[in-house]
Image (tube, rainbow over all chains, first blue to last red; front, side):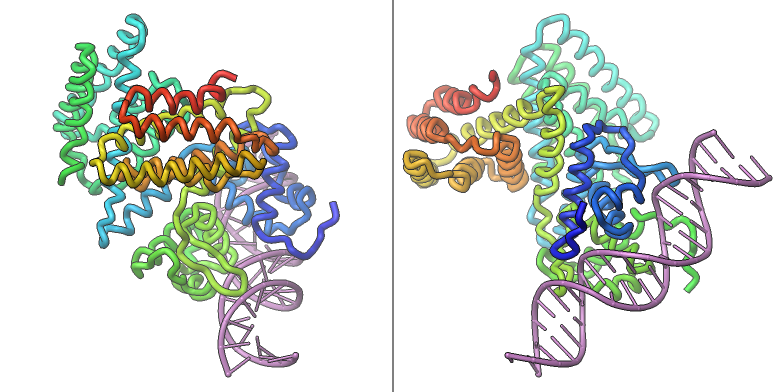
Length: 227
Length: 227
DNA sequence: TGGGATTTGTACGTATGTATA
DNA sequence: TTATACATACGTACAAATCCC
């Protein structure tokens, strides 16, 4: 527990807090020691520990609830969303095309998911298609009365990614969807066209025609890849 | 100078610093104002500004050099690597399979890249294949004398991703490669087999047979997806 | 070579907002 | 409502690293 006063960069304190989490086998949602206890555990002052917590908070490794305590975070893709979104906002000028790249990634994810969906056995596929159809219908209804359908849109693509049977890929699908939404024009919720393309995707998937499904997904993203 | 005591959460200060970067059109590597100047610019104390900087640092949006200054960061995928790696380390016990998911993502990325590679025109493809072959050969040589080939391994998959013509996808390929390496057993640099599968991938790509290339990539990752 | 200026890193004290009992 | 525990915010002082003259 010797403090070793020199050579302790901020990153070292971060590492030690990570070690505390790992050593105590803490799971997401579990409470961390209080700040003062952490100070003793890692041998640093409150300021340093607080900054380390802020770092880990940015990485979503811990979560802070004001007046309540600090807890192990969900370790989500949120930091990725923030970072790429900010990068996208920056190169408005040079037009290096982060937004186009984001749309491309989404298209690839959806197409891979579509292929996996068609490979599911009949019963499971039917259930999934039903839920997807319900979401597409909701989007259509909401668009009809000019209401935003962001939640449903997100849920659709997240559900579509389930056949991939890979939590990381699903998280990436959600993350890039969020980035896409954040980079879209603020008031651009005119999603009557989007609702239609989603219905088309479900219909293509129901038909079982792989080529048609790929084309439907491509058509969904096409206007954003050219314009 | 009344600080408007309420309503200024840490996240707000972070946002304001981001705005400073965006407003001044700063590019990666450009210097930010000093901490004290930032305090005035965003209207917060140095402690708060420092915590915000720490947050942005964790996201690789800024980079801090002690005694020198604060600079706009490279906005890399490093935070993603840290997060997923940490998550992978945590579920050693329950074996929920983060590592398997990482390998799966890599395989999908490489297979997509392989397909894109075969779609390149002859000259460009030939050049790329040459460089890939050279890297594979280097890996073989290094493995033969028991030397680590981490750099070459990374370079191989990064180069392979280039035909995708998508910087984000290439970054993801690099990031998941790094995660994979970090989660591998520490002394597990026994890469004589890895070198061979890389040679096989290049040979399959050279043959122009799409199916064979997909199989070669699959064979590269197969042992990690079953064991 | 060396010292001074600049900038970030660390520590501590104090007051305040917030949630729980 | 009160009391307690905790995070939040600010300010100040000093230490350490880097640069420049």
